[in-house]
Length: 153
Picture (cartoon, rainbow, N blue to C red):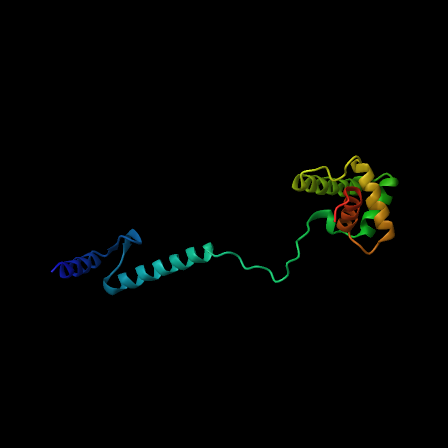
């Protein structure tokens, strides 16, 4: 008898023309009530599940580099030449990137990766590397300086 009473209550509730699940002021009628509520619930459920799924992993496992590190050695040498002619703005951006890169490595490794040298020496080292390897990027020049200074693998 209890199941019959529940079915009767559901029928009465749907004739009330208000869906309490969707919005109290949204009028519904008859079987359309069930279809609209079910559609809204399904859409909401799919949206929530889709949002909780982890993003797809990229095919290549290469790290993404940002900033001036991805620029080529030719551009870096051009900025160094411009700085010698009185326009140091672009070279300062390379120096800022290098300072951030070295600081991040020092924090991750828990030691000063430049040892007893300073940022000026690191900039000179990158310039020397870029003169010899013009087809490389500034990141490779920075890594060469850090590896030679810190004796990293």
